[in-house]
Length: 317
Image (tube, rainbow, N blue to C red; front, side, top):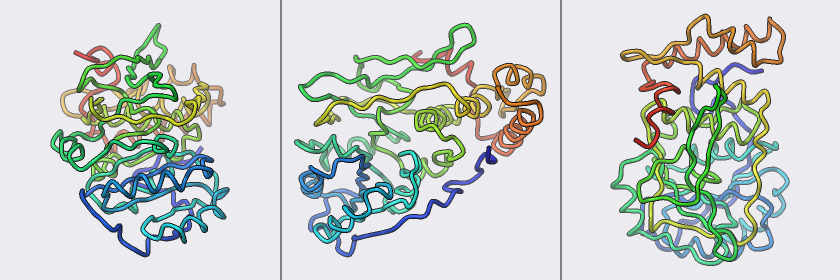
């Protein structure tokens, strides 16, 4: 397994930039809209038309190599949209790293393209209200086709020393959530970058997301759900693969082992044995991964404002 990245976008995914030769015709807010694509080419024209009407300073459409041909065509049709096409298959979290590096504005709205086929209610007034909250990330309320509610509140929990994430459909304005569903949310770009972005050494898309947002909470940032900020899926909501595998072990090392005391965090040497009991790797590889996590935690020790135990015990209080 690769060494834990120490800076934002350390893994340079090769990507092609298409379009973006013109500025949007009307700019009403200093926000970049990042559209994450996942095989929705059949309604992308409608999606981009809806988004361009809202007055974003910049629109970025990001996808993987399988969409290169489609992106060429859309770039000619929408010269005010910048299309980023990764040259390798990577989880959406790594596509976000690329998009945030290209965004340029202080704030970024992230949406899945199947959330923008019909009505896009986001506007400059809402953007202004969200900016004033001063948060790292604000998550929207989500609906699936037919106005069915989608879980939008996710809470970290531990049962018999096993980490789990619980979900809930109901919420109140400003209620904390571990992460925004499907990455959809309103982000402070600088904070995203200072948090180091998505860890490419975690191969699971789900554990990439949990790792990034749990780190945000450990480092003193917050994520909450806002009323009046919502999107609806045009199709069924995709299922996430939450398999506990080697990706979970990297999350466990970086987020669950550090212990916070006074003003910094450290990984106690004896916690290696707790990690080894969960690892399917041999002694040499397990010890190598543990030492890598110790070095990473030492490098970032003063970024921590809490540890996993205090986050979980005080969640929602």
